[in-house]
Length: 383
Image 1: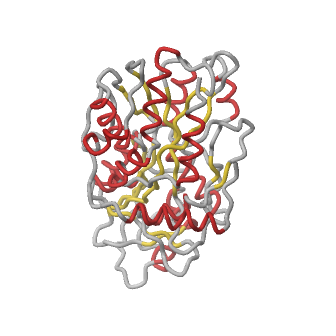
Image 2 (image 1 turned 30 degrees about the vertical axis):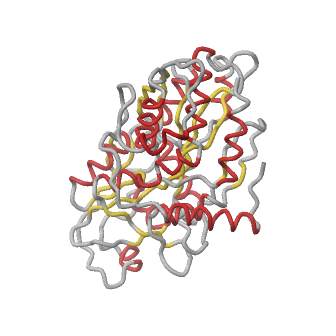
Image 3 (image 1 turned 135 degrees about the horizontal axis):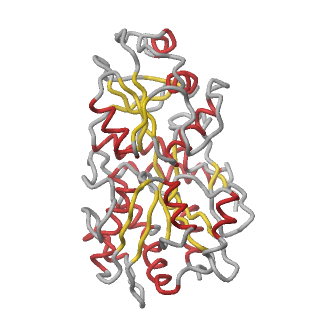
């Protein structure tokens, strides 16, 4: 199951970059990024992807919930899927990864979206709803990146690194013209203004991926473990990625974090990250693909669980380090029989080349073939 860092892995990285490079990242994506309620809707992808969709013999409407990071991707997919399979509508409620996993383990949704793999305690809890000896598993479905979004007066391009970000988000650096920030941005006139940092108020896989990066790459400046719940001192909170993005957009001299799609939709600037490579790395899907393509298996005890281990401390040239993979959480066995066929049909579409390509111009990273092939195999075994 391990994805090795060998010649094949290098080829994956090149292939992933080539695929993403062929997509236009200028598009701003769906305006309905919250994906909160309603049946199939949204824009984009339905006409070009319909040929790749095979409807279930037994169609049924589905409920799902969780990650807001994949909200725009779900909008695209459910529009295409619902157009091809009118009796297979999907109602996806955002609310964050924590809420999605909780609803899945309460038996309220067919699947959950999470930007963080299931914890051992969450897997154990899932056994109550995955009947017949089944349990929840992680299926990688959406690749992306966490943008460090900023709104600093007079600054169009900003470079930050992990130790500096850790201190900003922990209220240890409080002025934009602090020496640590100035050293990373020679020639840039930084205002002598207070920094207003924003973080997520809800349990969030996006927060977990950001804090995993800070914990791995900040040389001890971030004193907290990676977690869905925000632990840094100070700052202000906002609900979901949409809330953080809205606050950064409206508050001068602010900084926050959100997925690339939210940065694009809100016309927000994203900081470049100094990783130790020869030059800072921009927050682009191409650069995130370089990192995601080298992911390894997280070594889950269940061979059908495809959780990945990401290299947040990468120093590879052109590798953006703050990446995320959103998982669809399903039962390996014991899925609800009334929606099982539709679930498999939907997931087979989303992991297909057409499904992955359909979200490439919304700020997402198509998953490498070695990952998508394994996901396809596991989908075929769901029962």
